[in-house]
Image 1: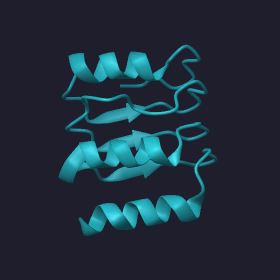
Image 2: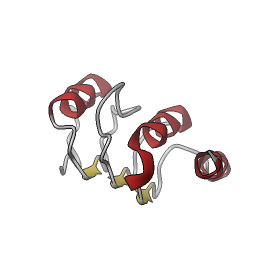
Image 3: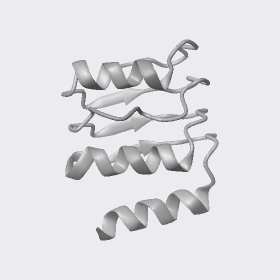
Length: 97
C-alpha cells in the first residue's frame, strides 16, 4: 500500500486501514508528516515499512514492531524523526524477545 506524500494521513486513518486491510505486506508512509504512529490494530502481516522523512516516533515504531511479528523484515527510516541510537535499542530488544 503506497501512501507516500499523502499529507492527510493520520493515525486514526492508519488504524482504520489496518482493521479493514489486515493482510497488507508493504506499507509506504514516506513523507506522511502528520502520522506519528501506525495505530492500535492491524498490520499483523506487515513485512516492509517505508517511513522515510516521517515523524513516527520511537514509541510508535516499537508498537508497530511488536504487532508485526516474525514476518517483519525491512524498515526504511531515512531522515525520520527517531534517533538512530534509540531505534537500534528498540530493534535489539525486539530481536531478543
